[in-house]
Image 1 (cartoon, one colour):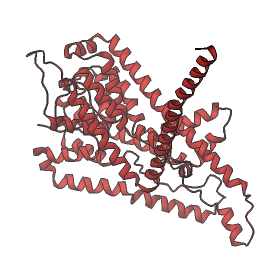
Image 2: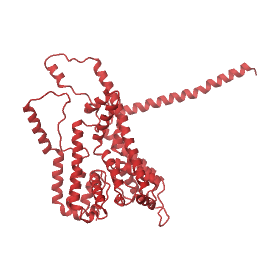
Image 3: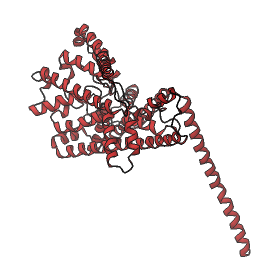
Image 4: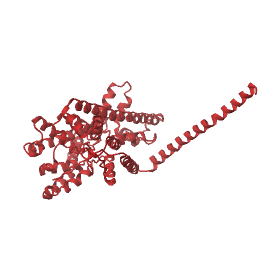
Length: 469
């Protein structure tokens, strides 16, 4: 066959080889369009609560399947596998995904690979991660709430004056909001990754230096890397799982480890809005393009991200959280310092750090360094109140005001002060505390005799602390 004939055959084969690639590109493009259409349909027609419910159910079942497919840890005494019941494994998977920290099996039953699965479940179930996923899945046309009309524009309409806005402003404003949401996605991702990296490195360094704590891990057959990642993810997500049967009680004489976990518990839960706003403010000071950062700080309501609160609310939230911690710290020191509850804490420094750790974790994290069953009834009532309060509770519910508000008259300022005082006295959180205290007073004998009354509150508040006699 001539050279020209071979060239024709090779050319035809080359043309035929292009066909599968074209088909593959068409299939990929069609798949992307289908996924985009499904995303739009789900985002527009399905309620956010249903989407979140489906998300947690699918993740819980996936975690259950992975935990069941992996081998459990061999028991040192018998050398055999101690596989828990399937229902208990499912319960633990759901608890890790919903960060409620309720477990029906001992944590030391799980192998290293199973602990890694639980770590992933706690990470994808944490409030910070779920909110970040919600930001990434927002549609361009529905990522923000509609902007509120200013008082100046309303006055112009009432006076019959044509508003001074141009047709180009809404499109520019829409583009600015879209850029702000995309920026907020990166900020939340940076906050999540940086918090975990700092926490994991700190725990790993502390456990490597502290030989007493390292011996505990060696005795229980726990990997240092797995323990560091598992504990930080659990604390940041407010789950409260620790890969030891004793929770943090076995590390009660390691105040350094407790001091590392305290900021993680606050940054991932009650102080997340305040820390997030502080991060936006700090990066806005350093960034060259400050327009997006300024818009994020001044227009939190238009952005529609529930964890980015206005400046005044963020400051009052931080004050409320610190006030709750101080209140619990004083009560625990006053009533439990000389009792048997803190008997395992040898020095005064260990007791101070242990009480502070317990005060921070009593609301939503659930890690403990003391036996809850030995606490006095008054502190149990206080724990019940703290567990019932939502994470972003503020006892100073001041109304949100516009940044560019005009100077008001003295009478209007007095009326606003009276209204704020009434909001403080008759706030929903105040009603909740009053009724919980009344219930605990009427059932004070049952609180001591029947720990089920205490334990029912715990999973509802995603705390998971169980009081046992």
